[in-house]
Image 1 (cartoon, helix red, strand yellow):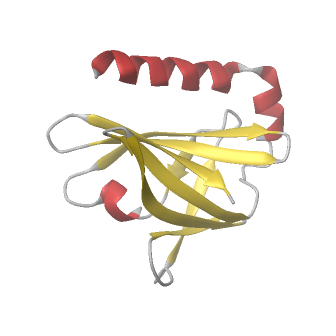
Image 2 (cartoon, helix red, strand yellow; image 1 turned 30 degrees about the vertical axis):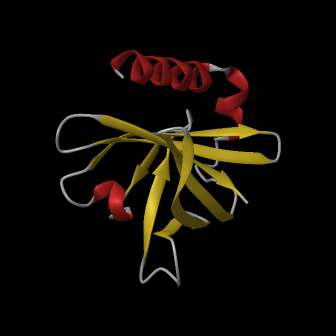
Image 3 (spheres, one colour; image 1 turned 180 degrees about the vertical axis):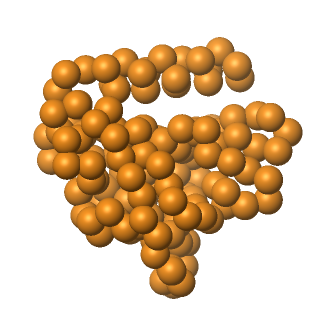
Amino acid sequence: MASRISCIFSILLLVATTSGARADFTDGKLPDGDYHCEVYLLGMFLSLGDITIKGNVYSGPVTFGTAQQAYNYQMDANGVISWLGPLGGYTAGGNTISLTQATLEGAEASFDIIMRQPDGAFTASTCTKR
């Protein structure tokens, strides 16, 4: 598990250091839209809900219904996102966000959330624009 987390961090750092990625993040925003989040666990993909992005504001994740409140987020020139409010189960029950890294490939956008669980284990999920 530790080697898998190291591999994920290495990939995220490689993406963050490419010159094309920096240029795409200069406005500090993700493209507006709904991002579907899922995690690969025990041989299958599990849905973690949708996060909606509008400008510098996010809401969710939501599995059913609508989000109750929206919060601001910030993104630096390298695509590292700081959530300025709660993020559902990612920040509940003793969980914390270790890193969120955005990726832009042309018109396609996504971000990876690395969450640290109360027992110290890490879980990575990917949120892809629908």
